[in-house]
Amino acid sequence: MAAILEKSKLALLGGQPVRTKPFAHCNTIGAEEKRAVAEVMETGVLSEFVGVWGDHFNGGPRVRGLEREWADYFGVKHAVTINSNTSGLFAAIGALGIGPGDEVIVSPYTMSASAIAPLVYGATPVFADIDPVTYCLSPASVRARITPRIKAILAVDIFGHPAEWDELRAIAKEHKLGLIEDAAQIPGGKYKGRWAGALGDIGIFSLNYHKTIHCGEGGVAVTNDDHLAERLRLIRNHAETVVAAQGDARNFGLIGFNYRMTELHAAIASEQLKKLEALTAPRIEYAGILQERWGKIPGLQPATCQRDCRHVYYVFATQYDEALHGVPRTKFLEAVKAEGVALAGGYVEPLYLQPIYQQRVMNCGPTCRGYSGEVSYARGLCPTTELMHFSRLFYTPLIHAHLSRADVEDVALAVEKVIANISQLK
Image (cartoon, rainbow, N blue to C red; front, side, top):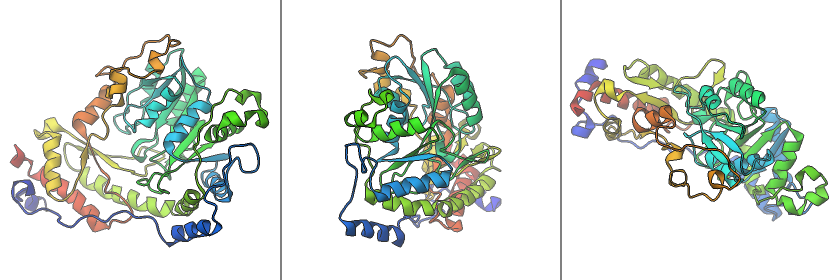
């Protein structure tokens, strides 16, 4: 095979591509979800939330049912549905009582909402660097960012691999910090035998349409703390209108929002939860194929799963050594795409390079009158993150249960062919 590949003309230069057939679309919605939606439609009640204290303050039967199922599945005391992971992150910051003058350590290599969440409450995001193997927050970098103003760590289980939670927990305990887990990409993952999402004080799952299980838009926050659970529910549903009736003076200053999930979304999510393992297992199997194939190639470092963890491969990340191959990552990915396999380079630009941080145009956080610290958002702040984004990392979202083994082998072969003939790109 190696000899054949080495004599192959790259498709980018006029050769025959590895694949011309499009990959199957991942559609996890089936008869079960359609039946559940129809049952809700028959009732004529698509949401039972009301913004006053009483029987329906916490929603209708489908919402409450999903919360019980989610809590049972992940072994937590409380599950609180919300309308998105983003809303859950915002609610988590509010539940911990974080506000102007406070700082929260966040990751620069994730979806923007994780870093914006502190700003919503007037707090300041402080970016720590990532680990070069897991791409999650580096505990060493987190320690280096600790100041007297830090009130919480918001860590992301990026790409489906858990962060180093024992170390993060130790840092949080030492400095009396809140610990929030953004588990958007890791339903079904584990860390040392424990479910991901249940590793912080509050964990937030996503049910956005391109997640492993979804209901279009939605999320679930989990916690084992009774008081935090109550605050999450209040923030979800217009807290300020009900805190007097609810009666806990600790909550009187809470402002709420409309972060509520509908009965329709809950019905779909309930059926999706039943499919989690069936949709996760193929991702792990297919990731193993790429690890075995690409792991033999000099200059490629495919994603690995750290000891005592379960990686669920929301995406499959790989590092490419430009210096070794003598071809820029952009050119390499262009050649792979010509072979019929579209990969992506860099994931997201380091968040602190966005205009809101570079121009400091926010009306809160580091620009608040009550903020006494100094925070940097300068280029070079997180060198590992910048290296991964600008030159080393590429990833494939083409790892899901609706692919065949032959599909995944085409993905592997396209990269192997380009690497074997990379001299043609020079």
